[in-house]
Amino acid sequence: MRKKTFTLIDLVLSIVLMSSIIMMVYCVYTFFARQVPYNRERYDMLSQINYALEDMKVRLVSASQIDAGSLFSLTTTSFSDAKQKFKFFGEKDIYKITPNDTADDIWYEYRIDNKSLILETHGVAGATKEILVDSRYQPQVAFEWYEGYEPNFFTVVITAKGTTNPPVEISRTEGIRFWFVDVKQ
Image 1 (cartoon, rainbow, N blue to C red):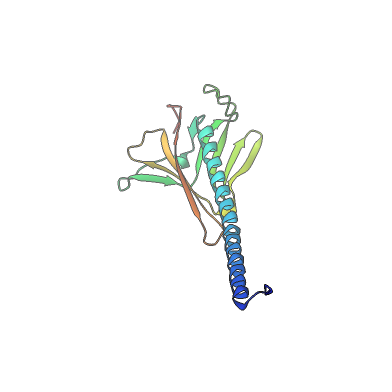
Image 2: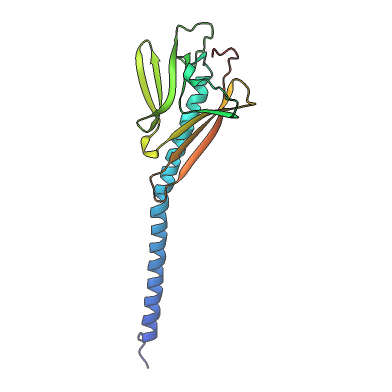
């Protein structure tokens, strides 16, 4: 009887097979090691942008006055007007709208401050700042009104840039409407 032993061909085939398995595991690990932080950052940016846009939609419902620097005005040579900040006077409690009583209203301002998109409020109790989109994402905001839009409607474009390599850029555009027809300008 012959004894069963490994031949040279068996050893070479097992080395090639093991090397292939190790390479596949390494490739899968590398893929997920890159994709997980990339997707996590993308989700975080999108969440912050969505939060900022929802905050704007909820607060602008109660707007009763727009600051003079935030007014949209078309020139004869342009068909659009864009602002980098927007300031308005509205309800302090956004869930209790009292259109005939402005005593409880405060000033709201959306703008870029220290490379973050912030909401700053000014009222009797003082000023507060809330970061809506973090500075690490280098947010940009544009409040735009185009000729032909309704008078109480404009668009907001928020753009954020990721920190991964290559950096991902996310941009969302949302139309926002004032519900009070008699907004003071």
